Length: 262
Ligand code: ZN
Image (cartoon, rainbow, N blue to C red; front, side, top):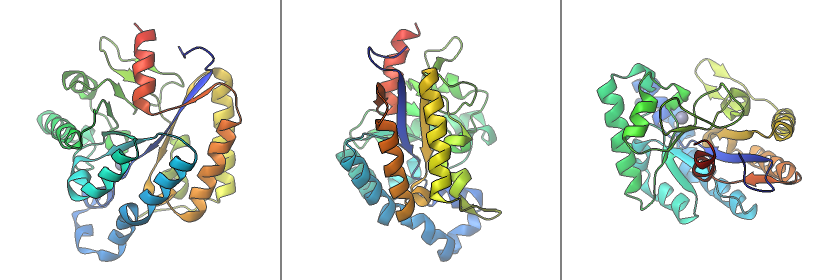
């Protein structure tokens, strides 16, 4: 499955949801500057810190961006593109496709691809808000020329969706920072960095032994706190201490395995 000399692949992925995660969940947030200031942390502080870390570590990541976020924060997207990272789709607003009518889901997908491609990049990947794909999502992805999805939790290795030319890069809540550091109405959790570093290191080491893929799902508004950026830096060092690890954007993994899965 992997290129010669490679034993395991890992992608560092970031979901800059900014305001959409809050306002889609409850439109009343639009009138609440306090909670919304947390969203604003993403373009102001978190993205610059993340881009700096990735540059220092010489890593290219993937940024799953809602179309509305790209419209509202074009300078943020431009900075990500200028640094050479992959941009992929993450809904138009932050509405999960499983709660949308099929024509609306398709419209969001198509519209977002167009908006993101307006930044001069190829958009070939998709992550549903909250990983909540619908019954139609994979078919829609093929129809609109996406080559991969990264939403499902049913494997540790990439696979191809049945009867479709769409690769799945499987995820897990275990590799998602929101579960550990999430903040929101009804969800307050502030794990220590040491705990999360241990959790992700153990999982990475085990996936490495099995020759799988590690797709980290990180949210700038939570991973972007200074102490957590330092923890992520340490985690990257741990990953790099293994031989034969392919650290690359999701699209590169998908393009490669797509050939091997034919
Ligand atoms: Zn999201």
